[in-house]
Length: 248
Ligand code: HEC
Ligand code: HEC
Ligand code: HEC
Ligand code: HEC
Ligand code: HEC
Image (tube, rainbow, N blue to C red; front, top):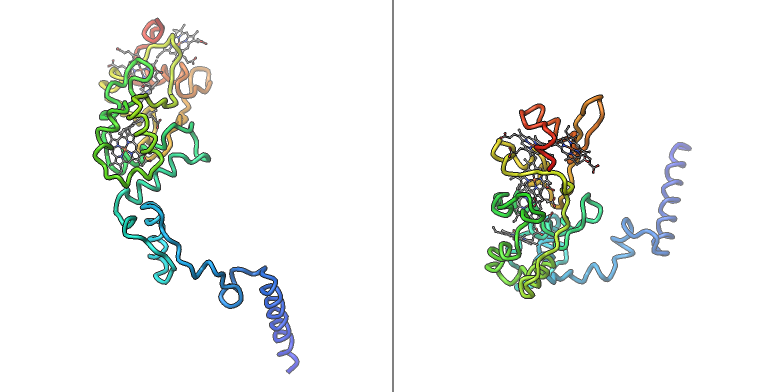
């Protein structure tokens, strides 16, 4: 008989604290069902963009009773959910790499939509920004997209450049010093993939310099773009090691 008492006592102890806390509004999650049903939970969340509508549809899929409202104007398949998500991730300040003027995702364009690297990086060559696509090239596709895309800030910025005829000032990530000669063609022709030197670009929303360490002579480490990085690969694959091949 005496053994029944402690559990009972502790139960009522828990209940009284629970009631006290919920009266004070300190328990929001557990007590919310009874005491603290917030007024806002009854008001449906109304989508104000196609991207938000995707978000709310995902909530609805998990919980069919969720209070959610999607106006017809935002109940559209495009921009796709993947495009909305990539757009956020390409400007993720916690991810490595510089913040670009437009949240442009390689994962989305080159991965998801399988647009060929060379379609955008046609003349990837010696000159500084030669390899980065022009506003015209972007608009070649985006001009034909439905108006809903204008809700994406990146598309707004792109179209502003298009109207004002100003180039986008992309932040360059890979750059050799002036005294170094590097040509993409020789390397692409030798059979290297872009990813051999730039990493899995098609999986990256935000680009950064993917580290690569080569153990150079005397066991010294050479980081990507350093001389030892170039020479180690040349040594292994029959590239030139003569100073004048790389230096003018
Ligand atoms: C070959 C066609 C094509 C070209 C060229 C192209 N895009 Fe896109 N872009 C797309 C497609 C397709 C989508 C995604 C559509 C969807 O899923 O809703 C997209 C989505 C986007 C998005 C939203 C997703 C994201 O990455 O943030 C932005 C912003 C964007 N493009 C900017 C650009 C810019 C800037 C350029 C030029 C550097 C460019 N696009 C060039 C086809 C293209
Ligand atoms: C739709 C156009 C588009 C496609 C397709 C594309 N890129 Fe890009 N790329 C860009 C733009 C715009 C930038 C500049 C902004 C940035 O760095 O994200 C860029 C930047 C880069 C850079 C960094 C250049 C620097 O500043 O050092 C590399 C490397 C690169 N791309 C490689 C690739 C590879 C590899 C692929 C294929 C897997 C690819 N890109 C496909 C548009 C494209
Ligand atoms: C052998 C290594 C290597 C390969 C393979 C390679 N790159 Fe590069 N990439 C570099 C180096 C090194 C730089 C810096 C070049 C400079 O500053 O002169 C660079 C710079 C770039 C840049 C920015 C500067 C510019 O020239 O516009 C882009 C964009 C780029 N690469 C895209 C690509 C793409 C796309 C491919 C595949 C078609 C590719 N790269 C293949 C090593 C490589
Ligand atoms: C395969 C290409 C390649 C070859 C071959 C090469 N270099 Fe370099 N070198 C580079 C690159 C890339 C850099 C710039 C990156 C760095 O400083 O590590 C560089 C940088 C240098 C620098 C430093 C310049 C500075 O601003 O600090 C010197 C000096 C130099 N190289 C001398 C030589 C000499 C001497 C040879 C021949 C024995 C040689 N290099 C062969 C690619 C090469
Ligand atoms: C992933 C391996 C690899 C890396 C990294 C690499 N190279 Fe090369 N490079 C080669 C090979 C292989 C060749 C020989 C290609 C041929 O003969 O067709 C070559 C050829 C060259 C040539 C001669 C081009 C010509 O027209 O004959 C130069 C210059 C050069 N590389 C510079 C560089 C510089 C500078 C770097 C570093 C910034 C670098 N390479 C990094 C593999 C590489």
